[in-house]
Image (cartoon, rainbow, N blue to C red; front, top):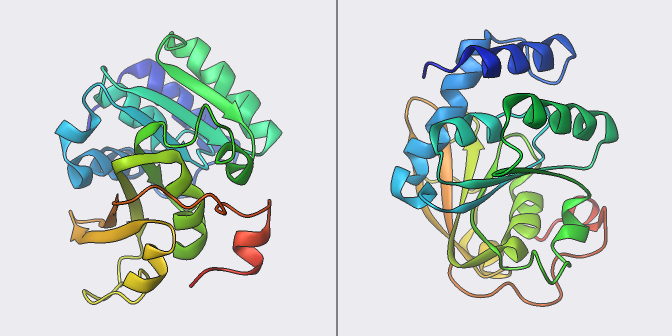
Length: 209
């Protein structure tokens, strides 16, 4: 995917600050754009999208560039990265449709204004599958979609997303894809039970599956 010079500059700065991996920047951009291909472009049209653990803005800023009708929330709990993202959004002139939220995902999932409010949640390197599922499910509306970047060597019959575990938070694995990057797509089939997410840190300390 070709991006505007302004976004290129923002992402280059993020990489210089150590907020992105050491791979070539274009590889990060293409991987971020592939989230839209994996989830289906139609899923992002006029959608409320949340990037779980946005870090340096990948994939959220690239999704915002590609899907101009989407309202994108960049969620991160680290102050330094939140400050960078706020500056980046202002610099790009996207304040009207891209929001930066500095908070822990577990707390956001308990916010009545955020719970069940999103059409799509995306996650790149956020955490183990159980942690990602427990933090994403409360934010998704019924019928909403979780798109997660997966390890390239994950098997087709991936045990990382067991049906019984996903069902605890109302989710079901829809498909595993490689485009050439690997993604897991999960659908929020039922409202996430009120007991999830658990307190900050608990999903990682005591994963559901």
